[in-house]
Length: 349
Image 1: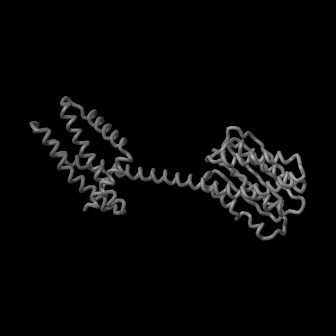
Image 2 (image 1 turned 135 degrees about the horizontal axis):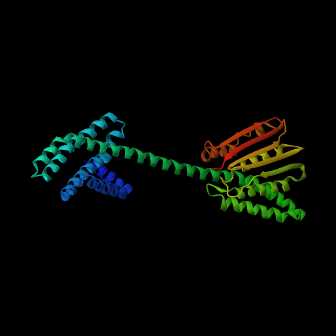
Image 3 (image 1 turned 60 degrees about the vertical axis):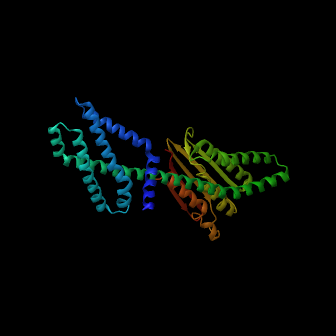
């Protein structure tokens, strides 16, 4: 019994902590509304009458929220729930009728009117109780949606961190190896590599932690990435990057393209002996962004290089596309014997 009482007390605290101000404002507004529509010459009587109405309305609402719904509706006993709610309204109706009857003493006609309207009092209590059920269902749905959104955001952040961890080691080690080779040769390109790598790391560590980043910065990150790849691969490959359209005042999820681009170098140029190429085109038309990446591929490369669409990076990016741009993107991957083609279209709004 003590456990049951503490459970009820816990529900009351939870309800008040969650919606205390909302409840107070609702009952005050309802009270004022009832007083206004029922206003007559007996103003004091109206105030007391509507106070009784509000008290009994509040009684069935909180009995419903704190006891009936948790014990019956939450257990999917809908029929039993309806019966219990109706019985509660039936029990409260005579008590409410008695209270209204007592404050109407001295007015026999008014007392008789109250007694004849017991059915109306019952239906109004049942209606208010049912309305609180709708409120409970809507509130729970909104809470679930908020929790779902928060979980989705946490998932996106963890997947973004995972994506960074996938990009950093592979690219960083290759770039450092190129930098080391250039420093041995005392090449003038070494400072340029350091500067571009610094810009990229700053972007990844500090600027792309938000859900969206300026498209201009994302494109600049890609440009730096490709410049470093050009230095690393030298004249043995052809790398083209073409951007058409206005990227100002547009935003996109960070690191959305780099897994596709990195994949082109990792499984394209690195496995091609000659005539290797990576061709990247980005077209920005109003609020739509289209990206096409085509790279060379050796026809008889080992099997592990051909299983590209199943790589961790691409699985990760497909998941991010589904979460961030549901119904707003198209992704088509064409894996031919001699080339690999990716077409991605995203609605930025």
